[in-house]
Length: 80
Image 1 (cartoon, helix red, strand yellow):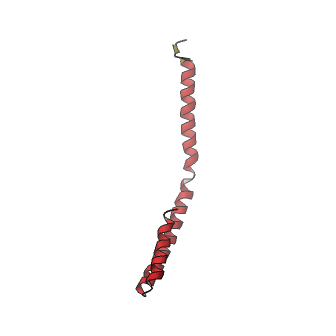
Image 2 (spheres, helix red, strand yellow):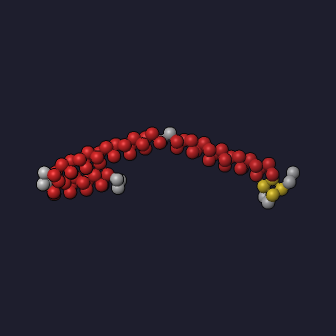
Image 3 (spheres, rainbow, N blue to C red):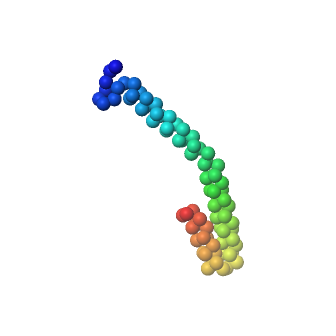
């Protein structure tokens, strides 16, 4: 057997395969969360759009304080 430092060639190859397997399988586990994240984004966009529409309606009717309050709430959705 050929030695490389403190590991033999067989052990080194085994360790490399274990690390590659862990990386491959852990990334596929995270792939299942994409639809959940997309759903959260869509709901925040929808809520922000609703607040935006209400804010612009308040602005058009002259209620600028209410408009500013609603638009700030819409912006806060993207900070969390």
